[in-house]
Image (tube, rainbow, N blue to C red; front, side):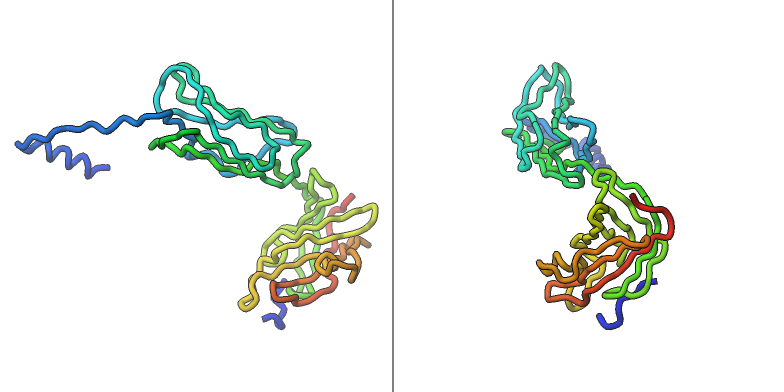
Length: 270
């Protein structure tokens, strides 16, 4: 079991209405003002993140209007900083329809798996509606998927000490050189790249899940990347063991640098 290295330290309104009806004094009824404008809105349940399919090329967004009416087209303001999406600048409602669908197309081959791109849609000249927002901001991207390939034991020695036995090693389905170990450190994902042809292992820049009382968030990353030069060389894989050359650091400096290992006890890697 790992430890921290010891060295680092509605009903009320109805009653009012009924009460007024019982009074002898007469009150003049003034109807609520009928909203003007398009009264077009997005669903309050629209997701903040849209996961796309790598084998698809389009997805749809539901758009609504408050009242039935003749067929009409409403202009939209579109913001897509990535430029990866083809988004119509208007949406059309059929005769008597209160729901329309906006079709957004994309080319999956131009996207980076695991990266989500911000998009904002807004109803042009919107005057507000009580039914939902006139602006919809979300992130869209193709998620990475992972396959469990092995189990192993991680041996800490630099910031955490001790071992974590029986951790699962996952390999990315889209990028075969990318691996991750969930529940590492203080419960985070430890990710690294393993190039089998060159037998090199490089650890990503990661938050360990631990925040030091004096120095703040503790991170870990590949030592050479941190130094900006060759200090220890890349890690490697040998005899069913990954050797990671890493450094644990905070904004003010670092705690320790050296080699930690993950030894496979079940399964194998390609």
